[in-house]
Amino acid sequence: MESTLNSRHLALEEQAFKAPIQRNSSDRASPLNPLQYDETFGRDGKLLINMGGRRTSWVSSIVQLRNSSKYLATYYEALAPGNPDPYINNAGVARFDSSGNIDTSFGARADGTVDIRFGATDYSFPQQIIELENGQLLVIGEHRRLSNTQFLHVTMTRLASDGSLDTSFGNDGVLNITSLANRAIRTVGTVVLPDGKIIMAATIAEEGPIRSFLIKLTPDGRLDESFAGQGILELQRSPATGTYLSGLKLVEERTRLFTYGYYGSAAGHEVGFMTRLDTDGNFDTNFGQSGFVDLEPNEPILIRDVSISSDEAHLLVTGLHFNRELRIEESLLARCLTNGKPDKRFNQGKPVYLRFHPTSTYDLWNDARTLMDEAGKIVVFGSGGTPTDSWSVAGRFHSTGKPDTSFAEGSSVGSPPGASFFPRGSYVEGSNPRTILCAGAAEGSGAVLAIKV
Image 1: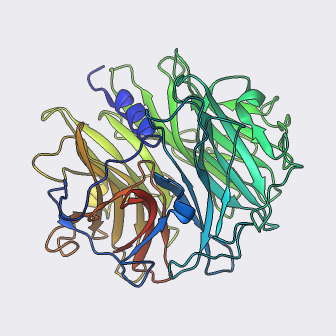
Image 2: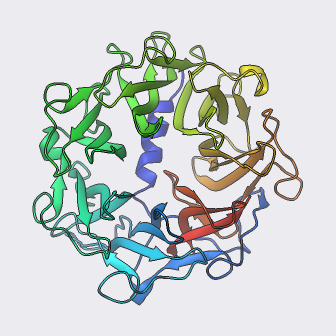
Image 3: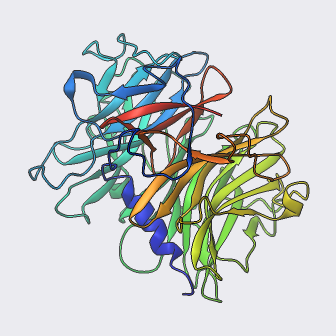
């Protein structure tokens, strides 16, 4: 391999289970200009999830409830070597309003939180939450222990809208996807179809060739055997070198699946790709070539996320690119048409590779979105720095792909003072469209960060 992007990707995934390095605003590691908090939200632009003195390390996902100004956030206490083994960590769901106030009507403790337990002991890591059509909540994550990292189960639990456990789902409210799939996997994204069926994208979590799967479940948590014969579809972009998925989205009025990631090329480098399928697992031949699009196949690229622009006319692609000449990893932002072809109006159809700072060697974008009231400007979130000193980053670009140097005190990129974005990224628009609520950590706790964009 001419680059080590696959190892880098796996290291990024593991960062999500470790506690962030705590820094205060006066001792910022980032050399970038500071971002601005929306101080009308929470306390000084932050909502700390530390109710009852219970320890938290990360807020890991945020979702806005349908037809409501309220939000849900998952959180957890990360792996810590000083804890006994076995250990039961603090993990759960919190509900809050658009001003950053905890909704104490949620949960039985009257503090706006409910616990999530994927097992009787060990660490529960909720990573995604989905509101179902009937108001129930589906929480997806992983269950593992510190002393044996090979112990890893992908799990789901279902809650009522008030946060109480739905014991009719799975085994007393918890569904073990690893057992259903009969293989060690990692979840990278889950969607729920209009008929209530569930599709999860997953990658292999054991030694050997890189393999990826789409797993389809019935609403009550059984494998849907009408999907790929047994409910599991192995997705292969390159059977010879392996395929790694990074995420899964539901698009086109929830009738199409969109997934993306990377595979190893015959030339020895990773190639970022995207693919579109129907919900039965058939590739959409109107997208790219036979349903697949490779992004700059001659360049080493990892795709971290693909999102639909606010005008629903573009795909915003984020990730990282290995610069062969400098031997560094640069952030990547690209814009494609919905059929997968490059958008020639954005950087002449090419991705924008950006090094955040002259000292940084590990830069990437995790998420991108357009700002409707800003002439199509694009705001992005990610991380930068070096292998031993990383910092969270947000940036802004013009619709043409040119960095917007009016964003952070004369720069196109900046870092949140005294805080970190969650490594896997979770970003939701606040009540003010110029404020993005970011999952992360601050002041020694998991936190929702309200960043002005």
